Image (cartoon, rainbow, N blue to C red):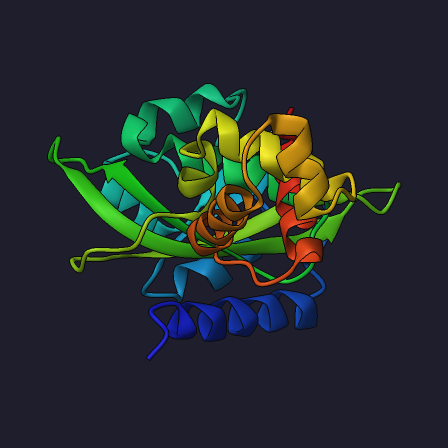
Length: 224
């Protein structure tokens, strides 16, 4: 079963409840009724301003996890995330920023190590999506739902992307530019067989099956 399935269901349930209560606006995410609705969930919830990448509020379960005094945040910026997230999962921050900056549809699945009130780092998985847009129809408010996770998780696409070799990045750039494998081989002074091998490895690492999917990842993470 998909590790994230129950998170998708819960996010959709809360989104519907907020919509029915007419609370899907930039001014409502710190209101008492808004907090009451997200406090009904047994999962960890964070509400973000993704235009400026800062936290706005958390539910009671998340407050208890962190050991914070309040559910509402005022005057915090992106350094909040750097203080509560382990450096080994900073890649999820990068994926999240790219996801909302590119305004991609659907949900983004995440893995984090978060700093528990006990001082221990806890592995969590979560999913997030835009719930409110600004006047320019760009993502403004997002809601993230998470739970603790004890099983080992595969590396994220961004981690695999960041681990590409210099040669693999060269070949990706040329593939995206429309060059054939023979043209790439001639340009890089390597055999066509070597280009084929590199291409297969790239597709396997990034879990893509066609050039359009590869181009999407390049655009998402702004590879230079």
